[in-house]
Amino acid sequence: MAMPPKSEQNGIPAIPSAQGILDAVAAPIAVLDQSGTIVATNWAWQDFGQANQARDSSHIGINYLEVCARATGGDAPCARAAAAGVRSVLSGDSTFVLEYPCHSPDEQRWFQLRVSRLKHMGAVYAVVIHHDITERILIEQEKQAYLARAQWHQEQLKAMAEVSARIAAVGTPEATLQEIADQARGIIGTHWAAVQTVSYGLWPHTSVALSLSEECLQGSALAISMAAAAISTQVIRSGVPVRLPTAAWPPEPDPHGGQEPTASPRPLVGMLAVPLVGAQGGGMMGAVMLSGKESGEFTPDDEALLTQLGQIASVAMESAAQVHAMRNAKERLLATQEHAGVGIGETDLTGRLVMVNARFCALTGYSRSELLTRSIFDLTDPENSTDEQALYQQHVAGERKAYALEQSYVRQDGSVTRFAATANAVFDEQGQFRYSVRVIQPLDQSTTLCLVPANDTP
Image (cartoon, rainbow, N blue to C red):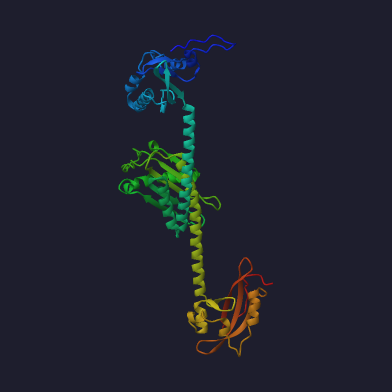
C-alpha cells in the first residue's frame, strides 16, 4: 500500500507516505484487506496493543473477523456486530459505526468503531478506526444521572404534595398519626413503619401508630417494635436522625440478659428514624421510624425524604391537635352556655335571634325553634317596654358596643315578665358587626345590671 512520494515541483513538497499519514492520526487505525486480514496499522494501534499486553502489537497478518468470531462473554455481542459491520463495508457499504464498551481492570472505557471503504489499485480495503469516546460517555452518563435525579426529585415533590394533602385531610389526632405512618411506609417502600409521640403542647399524651405490610404481619412485627423502642428514645432525646444498615440492625439479643431471646426480626432490612420537631417552639414531638425496606438499604435520599415528611407530619399533628382543642373548647363553651343559669342568645343585624340556650327558652316559654323565627323586638310588650330599636341600631353601627336596660317580654302563655337585659356586640377584624350576645334575667331575682363589653365602649 506504499504510495511513492512525488518530487518537488514548483516548490510544492512531496506528499507523505500512507504509513506516515496513518501514524499521524491519534486514534488507533487498522487497514483490512478483502478477507478481513490486517495489512497495516498505525502507531496508536500498536501503542494500545502494548498497553493491553498484546503479543504482537501491530497485529499485521491477523484476521480481524476471526478475532471477532472468537470473542466470548459480554464482549461477544459487540464483536459480532463489529464483524458484521466490517463485512458490510467490504461488500459495498461506505461506512459503519458502532459504539461499544472496552473496560480494563483499572478503568472503564468506551470506543466508537468507524469502518470506511477504501479502493486502491482495484482492491477493496476496510479502514477501521477506534475513537476513544470515554469522556463523552461519562459526560452523558453524568447528564443522564442528573436528569434522572431531577426527575426523581420532581416525582418526590409531587408525591409529598399528595401525602401532605392526605395527612391534612384527616380529622382527629389519632387518625393523623395513623395516616402519617401509612404514608411514610408507602412513600419510601417498607414493610414496617411507626410514629411515636411524646407529651408536647396541645398533644398531652404518648401515642404510637403502626403500619405493617402483610409480610410483616405474618412475621416479626412485635420483635421489630420492641427493638425499635430504644432507637425512638435516642432520636427523640438527641433530635438527630438514625440510619442503620442491615448489618447493624436489629441488635442481637443479650445472651446474659436472663431472658429467652425473642424471634429474630429478619429478613427486614435496616432501620431509619427521624425526629418530629414541633413547628411552634421547636420542641420534640416524637419520631417516625421505618424498617424492612423493600429494595436495598436505606439511603441518604430516603433519610432526606423521611425528614421532609417528618416536617409535614409535625405541622399536621400540631394543626390536628389545635383543631381538636378548639373543637373541645367550643363544645365546652356551648355546654356552659346551655347550662347557664341566665338566658343567653345571639342576635343578627336586625335583632333576630340566631342562637338561644335552654334557660332563654324557659324564661320566655317558647321552644328553641319558635324563638329562632323571632327577633327581640317581637318579644317585647309594646305597652310596658322601652323602645330599643334606635338603641340597637347604634349598637350595630358600633356607636354603642354594649348597653343594658330593663325590658318587658311577652311570654308564650301571654303573661308579661320584666327582665334585666344586656347586649354586647361582637365585631370582626375589619370592624364589621357579626352578632350581639344578649343575656336576660328576671328582675325579681335580685338582679343587678352589669355590662362586660366584648369590645371597648367608645
